[in-house]
Length: 638
Image (cartoon, rainbow, N blue to C red; front, side, top):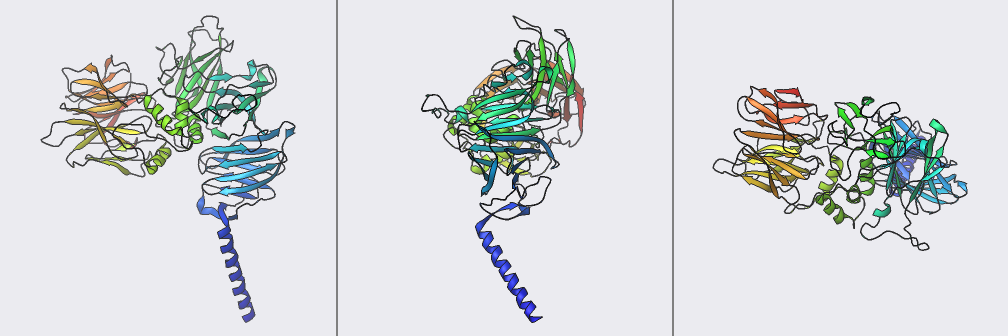
C-alpha cells in the first residue's frame, strides 16, 4: 500500500510538471469533437473551453478553426479548404470550397501547421507548390487567405447564380449573369471586391482585397516587367447551357495580396424575378418580403445587358422609395416589395430581370446579420473602406485621408470636428463593436446614457457640468458616430443650445444657440445636416462646417419635438392643446397634418423602421432602445 502511495505521488508530480512545461511552451485553443472530422478544433470565441495546444502543431488529419460566425476546415490530402457559415443557433449553414490551384492543376494539402494563436489563429497550409497562410479573426464571418507563392490561385466554388461587382460611389453595380455570357471564363472588372449570390437565395459570399487601396494616394505595387500594377485579378468560371447555365467558381489570382472571403447567410438574402410577359408601367407585387431591416438594392437587367440601378448616380437617397420617383422603380410597403416596370428608352430592349439584394446595414439591422459593407469594413478597415465607399461627404473623406497612412485594420474613425478631440483607442474599439446599433436613454436630467438594443449595458456618455441644465431631444446620427441634443438652460439663463457629443462618450461642443425655446433636432438621412427647429423657424446646420441656413418660417403655432425617418421625412408636433402632428418632406416644402390628440405637449415622435407608423407619447415618459415606456400609441402614416 505504501509503495502504491509513493507511485501515485510520483505520478501526480510528473503530470503537474509536464502540464506546467506545456503551458509555458503553448498557446491556447479548444479541442473537442464536433460535426466536422478534424484532429484539432480551434474555437476563437469560446475561451473558457480552451486547452493547452503546442504551438506549431501539425495534426495528421488537419485543423478546424472557427469563431461564432464562420468555421474553416483544412483536411490533409484534399485540394480545398472548406468554409461553413455558422448560424445564430450555432448550427452550420452554407458550405463553400476554396480550392488551391497552380497552372498545372490542383494542389493537395500536405500539412497544416498552427503558426500563431493569440487574438487570431494563423495556419500555414503547405502544398507541393508553396505555402498559403490562413487567418481567422475572433469575430466576423471572414477567413483570410494569403498565398506566399504568387503563382498560386484560389478558386471559390459554389452554385453561383449572379456575380455582383458593387460600385458604392456611383451605385452602378456591374451584374454578371451567366445565362447571357457565352464565354467559359469571364474576367471581372473588380478592383477591390465582388459578391457571389448563391443558387439557394439564402447565401452569398464576398471576396475583398486591398488592390488599388494598398497605397491610397501613394500609388500601388507595380509589375517590374510590364510596368502595370500587380493587383489581384478575378475570373468567373461558367458551366452548363441555356437556363441551366451558372457560374461554378470565382478564380482569383492574389499576386501576393491577402484575399478575404466572407460568407453571408440569412433567409431570403436575395431575390430574382423574371419580367418576361410584363408590360411597361405594370404594377407588380414581388413574391418576396424583406426579411430584415437593411439598405436593400434593386437592379433591373435589360435584354441587351443594360442595367437600371435603383439609385441615380452620386445620389444619397435611400433605396426603395415610392412610385412617384420614376428613377426608383422598386419600393417597400411595410415588408412587401413592389415594382413598377419602367418604360424602355433609346435602344434598350425590354427589361428581363429584377434582382434584389442587401448591401449595407441600417440602425435597426439585427446584430447577428452581416452585410457586404460589414465585410468590407472588417477586412479593409474603416479608413480605406470609407475612401472606397465614397459617400461623398467631406467628413468621411477627411477621416479616410487621415487613416490612409496607418493600419488598414485600425477600426472606425470619428468625423473630424473642430474643438472635439479625436477618439481614444477605447472609443475606437467601441465604435467597431456598436456597428451602428445606437440607442439613447434620457433620465430627465443633465445626463445621456447609451444602451444596447436588448436593454443591457447602460453606460453614461455625457454629463453636463451645470447640474440644473435639462437635456432633451437626443438623436443618434444614422452612422452611429454622434449624438445631437438640446440643452434647456437653468432658471435665470436664456440661451437654449444644441450640442454634439460622440456616441462613444467625451467632450461635447455647442453648435447652435438661441433665445427661442422648444428646440428640437433631427439628422438628415445622409448625416450631412442637422435639422433644428425652434418656435419660429426650421434651420439646417452643416455637420462639418456648422454653417446655418434658414429652411422654413413657422408662424402662428408653437412647434417642437422634431424627429425623422430614414426616407427623409421630418415629423414635428405643436405644443398647443390639442396637440397636432405634422410632416415636412425632404425638400422642406410640404407640411401635412397626421392626427390630433387631446394629450398636452406630445413629445419625441418615433417612426417605425419600415416607415409605416409613427409612435407618440406624452411628456412624462421616454423612449428606451425601441421598447415602449409609458402611454404610447401608434398611428399609421398616410
